[in-house]
Image (tube, rainbow, N blue to C red; front, top):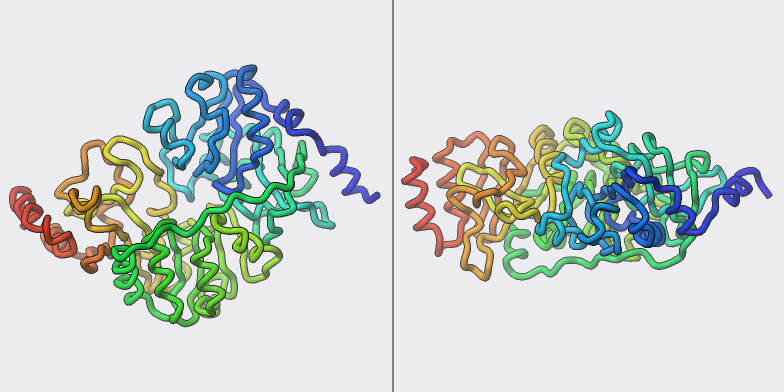
Length: 432
């Protein structure tokens, strides 16, 4: 038996024993989405009545573990970096709290001790012959948390790909190992209807061959992807690696050949998609997974010429402020990386930042382009950063425009049923 295998065996334990290493007052950091380790979090949930003042911090939880319970919030609570389906009800009811922060800055906040990180739990690939595990599904802020943590616990699963990039953890850094073999959580492509297709067509027409893409999650970004397969020599520098991007790679549209920063490689910080996507990542020299302070740093991402950032919002006002994370005062998602990549695209030579949204909500009864944001709405991306805004009715280009020119352009891409009242409101606000 090799020394590394002996070390591995000495750290292997049952999930209940691993969860027993969590102390009262600890903050447990969990990777984004698919990187969450189910066996470890089920075991932690089972301890929730005996623990006190433990926080679990994560972006986009996918499963509703038993610790997500308002009745045991004093024992284990969830502090969201970004709401997902499992945590959103608690956020809207007030028993799940959240941390306002740019995705790119979460590692810095952890490094500086502004965000606690006593324990890290993560899914991981099997160990390689050099003693390394790959946290391929979400190195994001997790790598920074590992640097600070008292305890690192890995759930080793053979279905987790061993990916390249700055996502490796050595056996010497690990306090406990739990083994599991359940299939990874899969997320299908969102539903794409005629509105999404129309928006995707407008955006695709403005993306040149040789552009580097950042693509957010949702029906509209994926509708854009579907209309890019005829493009040539696209590159990828993004936060989320999904099936849409995989389809562009497989079609030959993505080669990464003309990237001006890290050419030849697709760069991302977390994966969210199908089993086929995860298998494609395994020891693939063309894909690298990196921490979010690298992928989302606007200065680094902007080293890609012709960087095109495609992100969705829920509401925009006539001056260009985007509310992408709340419904009024009710939390829905989080700041995430939208502002990171909008700023990166604005800095990029030939870059284009797209904010996409359907013109209406609630079955056409509400205009998403509004005179002012709904009361309590959190501004995700500022009026100074917004450039291209796209609905199914066209494209409004805002940077360099006056307030009145912006209002005129945005009204021009609003649903026709609402343009009259938007003009009247704009006149009252002295914007027309």
